[in-house]
Image (tube, rainbow, N blue to C red; front, side, top):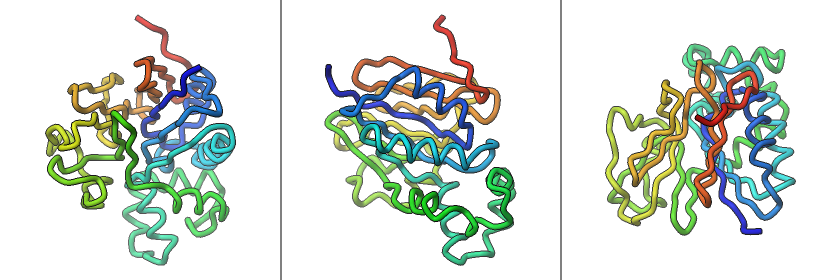
Length: 221
């Protein structure tokens, strides 16, 4: 059976949704699963989300991309405590509550290490993957970090990338719950922590699975 590339949008601690789409997609050892970042904050179960992803990494090839929420948490762990107030305002309080702790540096070391080992970007033969956005005229290795993790495509829509590959991004929540498809770009952050869905998209076949934050799968049609 052919190996697949499956991309998963912003999870934000919505573990039931993550487990539901993984159960539906059934990643196999030869498959590559690319998660687009923002594993932490806003949703109620960052702990469970990171545990699920660490377990997944033993069952297939997992490529985790770093999101802006993940980056902010790591900056605080690294000693930039002045960012704590900003982080709490964007959902960090939910992350602390999920662990029953008072500060990010009390998280389990293996969870922090998972975030530290996330990539800035990833590319396959036909696609490339970033958390937020990109400059069309620059190769991926030269992309500004703030653009990769913080730029909303709704505010500064990027054009087709010079590589000719299709961009797969998250970060800019599609509050209607639908994948945004511009042909040269697909945004699969479909607002799971709100009233939308978590999207898993098989880029090999085009098959899509979506689940709400409670783990209910979206039926076709």
